[in-house]
Image (cartoon, rainbow, N blue to C red; front, side, top):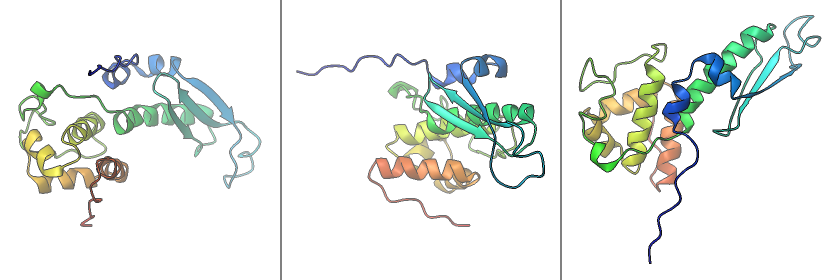
Amino acid sequence: MTTTPPPDPRPSRSTWAALAEPQLLAQCEVDTYRASGPGGQKRNKTSSAVRLRHPPSGLLVIAEESRSQHENKAKAVRRLWQALFLHLRDPLPPDALTPEAVAAHPDHPGTLDLSAKNPRFWPAAGLVLDVLAAAEARVSDAAALLGVSTGHLIDFLQSDPKVWQEANRLRAAAGHRPLKSGQ
């Protein structure tokens, strides 16, 4: 007898990623604290470091490099948004796994030319990692589903160290060897 697992009660990553910064921040538990380390006379006298806990997703991010609590809070929200794409996988329905349905760069099919500074980079990285997970971490299969070459996909994964690390984590979980960096 086969049983189907209960549906995941958490909303999908795309639900959280679509929220404006104030809405995402409203879902978080915000802690401020004094950061240790260098940074001048006021560094250890003000509680400027920020830790955000996002209970719905289980993610935690920190920002403590600025002496301004407001700057650190803004950085932490951006890091949380990035972490949503980096660490949470949205399952792709089997019938959606076609190159047209998962085009990461709709303006230029067959390419993933996005800089990490481009605002579309993290959503594209999340989609690429979703496809990689759906392809059981086989890079050649994921590249075919995305409609790009294997080399192009590997170049995209290498464009950000955290994306590269997550791709290799997915590969290890699927029982594959880590990808070797060509840089």
